[in-house]
Figure 1 (cartoon, rainbow, N blue to C red):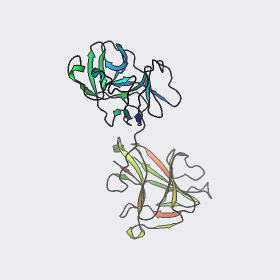
Figure 2 (tube, rainbow, N blue to C red; figure 1 turned 45 degrees about the vertical axis):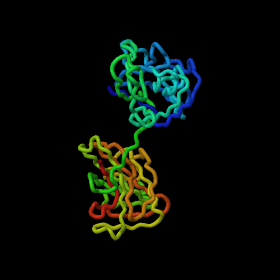
Figure 3 (cartoon, helix red, strand yellow; figure 1 turned 135 degrees about the horizontal axis):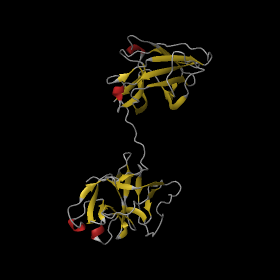
Length: 331
């Protein structure tokens, strides 16, 4: 049996606390700055043990309502019975290392981005049958056979219904050694000539007056993969079939646009910015990972490069050795 409970990606430090008979009534909102969630094990809700409301259980033939938990910015978890943690030396060997909401507990929890609750860095908890009607009590370490009504304890994980942080995407390579896409349309647009639609270009151009829009067609085969927007800027001496002119600070702002450009796109009618990806200061001899995201398979997406301050860069977009310009890599 595998059980999982997801919470915030925070380290939760708990100190000894006095028993609090009732902190939050069920279904009542958590205090400001806290997040509300429930726990489950393989889809079965975690509830209060009907024979002892401070103990948490699941999987009984007569389950109670799921407990509403709250977690605050400091990582303290509470329910309607008090502060939640792992029992230590309670003077009752039958409850040692049990997951309870009660007094006298010191524990460290972490919530992973995948929604699993971890105790001292481990997502593994243990279920021990209390009775058929009550179900299974929850422990942080394997309980003894004497603590189980019958059978051996089973390893589980705890899953939270909400409050898990977003997972940070792992960037794909900032080179063209694997799968990659080059821009299928490059449109330079001029602020000083806002109604001029220059059409497609082979060059990327970023100056005080001109910014460039790059369209990428993401293949259907990229479904389920990660994509990384990369900017490659080799030394002039490394280029064989390309070249560039460069001056100024090198600061370039990268932005994702709300829709692709077309051959008739001008500065006046260019798509709006959907998400600014930040400013990167580039210099020859370097490669840069700009942003990582789930590949939008089967779609055309567009990005704008614009100068910040004194930057002036014009280059021939080329994937021949050494590649230069804006690309999307996949992994």
